[in-house]
Length: 371
Image 1 (cartoon, helix red, strand yellow):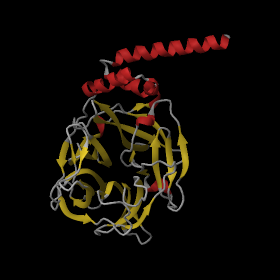
Image 2 (cartoon, rainbow, N blue to C red; image 1 turned 90 degrees about the vertical axis):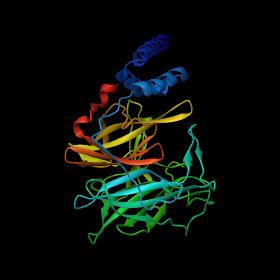
Image 3 (cartoon, rainbow, N blue to C red; image 1 turned 60 degrees about the vertical axis):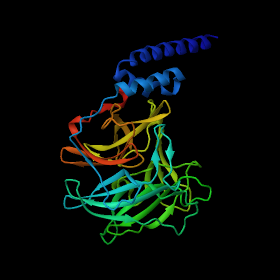
Image 4 (cartoon, one colour; image 1 turned 135 degrees about the vertical axis):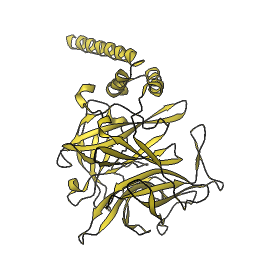
């Protein structure tokens, strides 16, 4: 009996604390961000709707030093640039893989096919100088030899890449992306492949099985080479933080690390690559809220520590931010150069850009301060 009373007392105090922070969050962004991280899983629909609407008004936009929109010179009719992925290359240059799409986004947030009713993706690899001006571009050929899906939807989506080196010290790109082209059940699945720099044809294409039998897979993030020790490793999800090994594409990927946190990291999605930052690693994740049927994307910086995939853990995060104030902002890649970070960003599914931000603008806080 006394145990039951104590439980009710605890729940009562918890609800009071939750409601108190909720009321503060209506007009205070710091309280709102903390409230969402701590109580999101226990919020009712009224709280959720109110908080999502308040984010539209209260979420700050980070100070951006430069912004450069990417234009693919040989882009086809009806296609638009979106979701670019940039990596540091050599001699001060960059490689940037740009996705172009033929479909459109309506005012209601829904997707509509092109003039032929198709949803097509074509990717281009651009070589850029230090000012993000295009020096060369190559259209990446779609591998159709193993395609099984009807051609209403075609192409490889949101390709994330990292620069790697083979045993002959030759540089190449390791790719990881979502595709509908290799699955008989019409499901989205992850695919890994490689691309020789200067080539238009992917090699070593491996459709990957879902480690948790999901019908839609996306947003796996490759770990840096120094953490992989010759293996193919990726962050699978953030709530909990799961790191998987997909080296053997003939079997289901194996979870090699799983960590739970007291804040609601389940809303963290996808993100950029991890870069060395201070004594750990920095990445950017996004969160999506829906208001009046429209999706709104927000981002936050996540700082991780650890010298192996098994010890890698979140220790600091930033508050939610916007980069340029658009509804849909999709950070794909991150580079640290001198005292600035470079972020490649998709905007509203119709634009691709590269922005630079001074590292002094990154405001990381100990994860425990959000409890």
